Length: 290
Image (tube, rainbow, N blue to C red; front, side, top):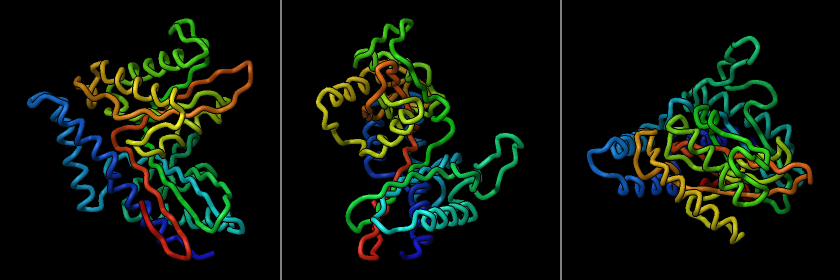
């Protein structure tokens, strides 16, 4: 297998400094919904100015460059050990070039590694062997502020009137948005997983955020719920950065997983407006980015 350290470094640079087109379009649409002279519109104008400057100067979109989360779909015969080494090398180089802020802190000693290389889970790398000869690497940079306002619920929840059904999922998801307020750096994007165990449910709630902001869920019921949650979240009046306004959530993405009969978890991963995710594809030794 070829050495992909340099292409992965470019993937990190692109993800950290260049907001995806669908997300930028969502922010610009949101800007038009807010009234001139109000704080909500001013916040979005500042955000979009920052997006333009980051792209032009190849500087991070946000000072918190987040946890690097890699999703690697690789062909049969590729070495995951070598890919992990190349990803870690690229992350360290990206930190040295200031595309990433040094974020890996030992939880016991409080010491920062200085290069974003921590234990086996920092950076986070998910590997999946697939058919065919194409390598696909998706990268998500998940900031700490929006990660802090993520939530997991075990249904039924009598306090929120949430049963083990999609109506219950709606209730707890709106509760998570209401509690996040401006601390999640709204306008946000909701990644929601229904089912699984506690661990797999949170993993799935992040993975579903790899979907395009403007796509549709193939499951009609979940597609309707996605639209409903986006609309109802925007009726809460929280608005950009918690300043009030019409845009609290840019979109909602939902997935479901099998569960044990005794458990019904709903996990909500809140993504901030800096919805940083990009994809790299390698086919026939040619590299492309999306």
